[in-house]
Image (cartoon, rainbow, N blue to C red; front, side, top):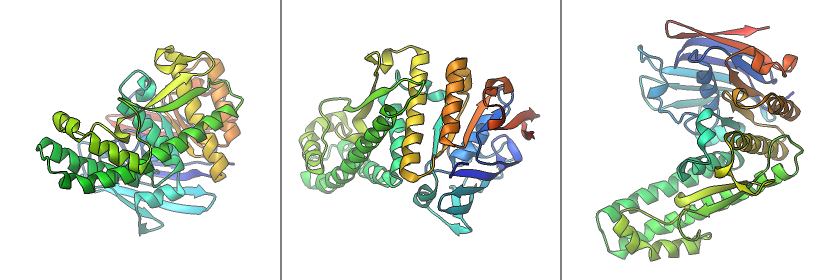
Amino acid sequence: MSGLFLTHLTLSHFRSHKVARIECDGRPVAIYGPNGAGKTNILEAVSLFSPGRGLRRSSAEEMTRRPEVLGWKVSGVLRSLAGIYEIEMWSERGAARQLRIDGKAATQGMLGDISRVLWLVPAMDRLWIEGAEGRRRFLDRMTLSFFPHHAEASLDYEKAMRERNRLLKDQVRDAHWYAALEAQMARTGAVIHANRQAALALLQGAQDQAQTAFPVADLELVQTEGEMPEGEDDLRAALAESRFRDLAAGRSLVGPHRADLYGVFAAKGVPAKDCSTGEQKALLVSLILANARALARDLGAPPILLLDEVAAHLDAGRRAALYDEICALKAQAWMTGTGPELFAELDQRAQYLEVTETDGTSQVARIV
C-alpha cells in the first residue's frame, strides 16, 4: 500500500461536477468515459492538493460550476506517512481560494509540507518544441516537489522583478532606485537557480539508476541568451551591468526567469526537440517517473500521480510498462482514458471509475 494517497474526495459545484463523492484506496485509479464527460476535472481537483494553481493554472473563478456561479468546494482525506489529514479548499463566488487543514486555516506552504502531487497532461506533449516558458514551469513544478518553499523564492523574485521592470519602462536612470530591487532579485534568484540544479541532479540520478522501458533524458539548465549567472554576487553584478540594455528593452533580460530546460534523448544523442512525437512523450513519462522515484526514496513514500489521457499516446508495450512501474512504486496514480480497454493491463491492480455526462452535469460511478 502506498504511503501517500487520498481515501476520500468530494467535489461540490466544481467545474462540471455538481456533486461527486469518491472513496478509494492506495491503488491506481483508472477513470474512463467519453470526451467532455468531466474526467480531467477530477484530476484538476486532486491537483489542488499540492501548492499552486493546479494542473490547468486556473483562477478560482474559472473552476466554479456554470451557470450557477455559486462558488465551489473540494475536500478530501489525505493519508501520508506523517498521519491522516482532512483538507478543504473552496471559493465563494469567484473570491480567492481558501484552504483549511484539519479545520484550521492553512497556507500553500503548509500544504506542500504534507502532500506531493505530480502530473502529466496532453498540453505538455509539445513541451520540447514550444517556448522556454513552458519548460521553466515544468521544471519548477518538479523542483517544488523536492523543495516546497521554492514557490516563496519565486514569488519574491517575481515581485522585485515587476518593480524593476516598472522602473525600466518609465526610463528611470538613477542607480539608487535599482540597488535594493536588484539585491532582492539576486538573493532569491540564486536560491531559485540552486533549487533547480539540485532538482535536476536528483532527477538524473533517479533516471540513471532505473531499469525502465522509458528512455533516459540528459538534462541541462541553460540561459536563453548568454551565460547563466549562478551565485548571488554574480547575479547582482549581471543585473547592474545589464541595466542600460534592459532600459532599451523595457524589461529585465538577465536572471532565472530567462532560463531554459534543455533535454537530450541520451541513448541516441538527439535533442528532445528533434525526437519523434512518441519519443518526446516517452521522455516526459520518464521524467515524471524519475521525479516520483526520487521523491519516494527521499520522503519514504511516492507522490500522487495524475496522468491525463496518457494511455492513448503509448503503444501497448509501453502502456503495460508504465502500469508496472506505477504499481512497483506503490503510487496512487489517477489516470484517464476514453474506455476501460486502455487499462486492461492493470486488471485488479487498480480501482475503476466511470464518468458520464448528462445535460452538462457529470456523474461518477465506481465500477466493482
